[in-house]
Length: 171
Image (cartoon, rainbow, N blue to C red):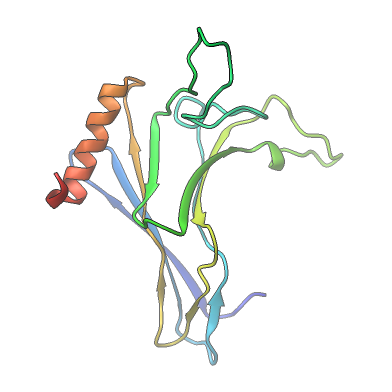
């Protein structure tokens, strides 16, 4: 149900010297008479071109998944140029899908050729938080790092640089 007075604010942080973006949502209700429960929130839904997202297509595999192909071929799906994760260890997930389910025409036919990668970062359950005049809810942060190459070494260096920037005590 819709609630008047509920406000959702999306916040973004760009980091200097690295192609890293942080995004999170804040839910507040300054004019609610009774508390309102936040049952579901999708912090990030991002459609991208195939090199940046998972090379899924309808019925394909996620990055790093076992392709189950011939032993002489690569056994894992290729990496992506966009690495996304959350700052919350449990209860939140970033997963690649495709836009095939939403590609239905008015006649009910799906467009088999217009399948693009879609990143969805959300809670696995809940969150189930209550907002009121005195309580706000702030979601986890989605951290998106853009890579310039499919090279495992370059991507690892980029992830290490992001870790060094965000959590210097761990490096």
